[in-house]
Image (cartoon, rainbow, N blue to C red; front, side, top):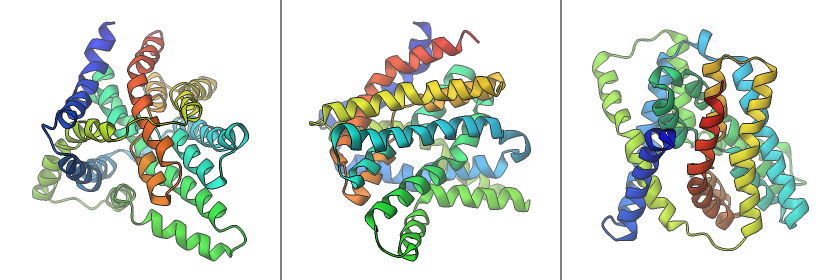
Length: 311
């Protein structure tokens, strides 16, 4: 219970502030959209750029950690995609969007602050390694699958153009790519620029959590109950269980193991709705899954933290 109070509730209280502020009309919905745009397109990219530019690539990018996490993520994407098709007879385009909901855990807005509060800022190395390729991997897989099903019978060139266009319009992907360029090239970011980036990056997580609460108020659950339940089960239970299994088989170090399992245990991120909205598919499932899974994760993340505490 102390873990719930000390680690999880402060994060969800900030989300709750945003939810109540919009619900009670203390903060306008248009303002929430502006805050979310600021965090998604400026503050979080600054945070990720700095993290990747400064991280020790040689020691941080553990192939066993990344393999465990993304093998589990890929399996969950397939489970969501084919589950939606076999059990609920959704169109293939809907199936891809639903699979993306099962794939994209909220690694930044929830994963980073919860891991930091549980184990300290020095334990975030594994999280940043996962986050570094999270958007490129997830968007790459989701966009490729969507372009394949949308362009059935058309040339591969059309598909490749669609994938490239969508990937290089994503601010998170661009920030991560620039971070890798700076890191690998050995270029030193001027101190005044680095200080400015730090100021913006400090606003990223608290502002994004507050905005997430306001966004969740707009995503009221509607219909598709069984499909939403499947997404929640895959995202909150199956993905961390798979990472636990794969990580145990590869004898991951404790810090990396915790980062992998906790990040996998996060609810679907708002990017799942952005992806669904981008293609106009399964938007109701995506929106409701974000809301319901985020609420349910208060309990499920607590249980995973308790399980990790036995290591």
